[in-house]
Image (cartoon, rainbow, N blue to C red; front, top):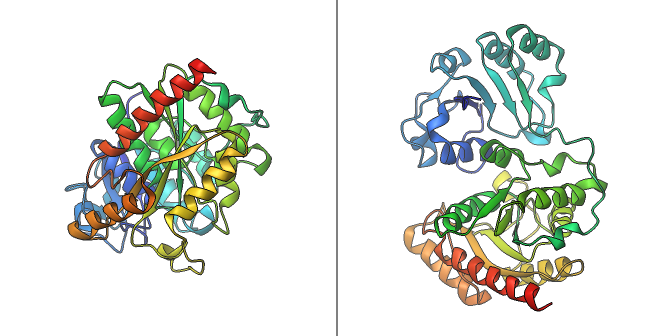
Length: 358
């Protein structure tokens, strides 16, 4: 199948913090992104808005976007509740008529919309609802702890702190070192980038751990290291259930703790904050204790998101995190993932030795 060329819909919410899916696709698939639709930012480039991405244009109408030659329209933001704004329906219908496929990570499944489904059928186009879970997920049974590779789960202090980005940067770094590494996507954005996975936040609660287990078993084929994308935070009032399901279902041997250095409250990037983020050392104790209740695990490194800090502030944040936790700490996008790659390599060697002598 020819790789799609995406027009990304991020209307009204295209920014460094709020358009996670759009931003990640632009960062990791820029050659496949023709433009972004956002009426607020129209006339600018993605570089102007995000600080990366180059000259990819931001347009104000679907007609302008379709003129850029996309073969697919991708939903690049997640509105509250993951539901599609009513206005977008006519835009997506226009895209189907134009010959585009639709890619969506919304909780509203586009293929269930009668108008869009009929237009897709008539035009011979496809609708990919990436949050639609498999129908045959198991209850977790602990099989993930039996796999040969080192399994590393990204965990966080909040949503949207860079868990997926950290794992993708680690995947690049480890493979460049000759360590066969597979990234396991557990959210819609990771699936768009990697091409496979399960969006676990759309899975019925009893089967979240089973979904994580299935992903680790699949990801462990022909790999030395499996990097599992994390979701939420263990103390997030809304999303801790997904975090716990991943933690126990994937049976990670090691954890990568992710944090946005400037964030003080859970959810404050959405201006709905009320729970203060505790120290990183508290998260380390929480994650290690709760994870090890099922399978022994330890935090091996700290990945920081310092996008909104100056260069000097960002370096101080990394130094402070390393000093306070005794672990390697870096912003893998800004300063490179080498310290975290080193930590994974050491953990893999220790893991192999423990398995050999068990």
